Amino acid sequence: MEFKDRVAIVTGGAMGIGRACAVKFAQAGARVAIADFDSEAGEKTAAEIRESGGDVIFHKTDVRSFAEVEACTEAVIQKWGRIDILVNNAARAIGGVVDEIDEDSWNEVISNNLTSVWRFMRCVVPHMRRAGKGSIVNMSSVQSLKGFHGWAAYAAAKGGINALTQQTALELAPAGIRVNAVAPGTIMTPLNEKVFREAADPDDLIRRWNEAHPLGRFGEADEVAEAVLFLASDRASFITGDIVRVDGGLVVKGD
Figure 1 (tube, rainbow, N blue to C red):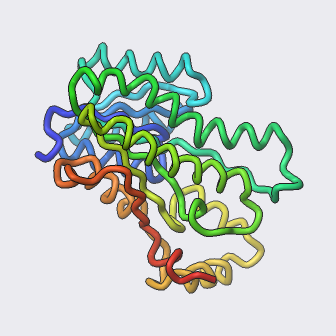
Figure 2: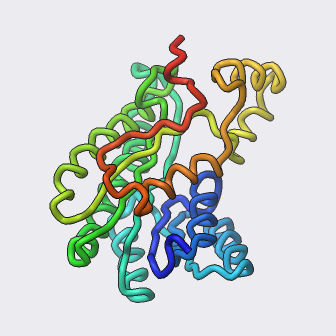
């Protein structure tokens, strides 16, 4: 198995893309720690992984809290003694154009999406340094690369993730730690399914979004997870500081 005996933390691992990552890492032999604020969904995902023979723990974690991130990191070290892979996937999206979004909402988005990445890296990287190796994959978005009306804070946070990914790739390379990011397009997660279902005309909205992608469809969480696993693996041993799009051609299509 590709990740046998390796330990992976997946933040926001209870549902959607994070869940797909956690499941695939476990299937590939990794020991997986799911860090998520949603206890019910997190425990459910962990139970499903265990039922399939995977080695997994769930740690309730509010990624906005440095103390909780630190506690999660220490719990993983206490359990398995190492951390080989960190997937910073936790996210929160609040819409609003730049002159309408309020400061609390702005700070909420930045803390959940961008500062949370720093918090986990700050806690996990020292353990990777001591091991002399590690792989970090941060979840960005095509909204960091292409403008979408009404998502100022989210785009800023994801753009910050790109910059942080490239900066830390440079800083951590001498320690044998690789840092990359994945930028998904429109992915059919439970959250997006809910958004489309609640639209005034769900079928028309889905049709228009399908047409926005050159490949003519939405992406699936498993497709994003495949990119994450590749970047975390030894197959990507000479890749660091990259932002990999999994977007069905959305960015290259332009307007």
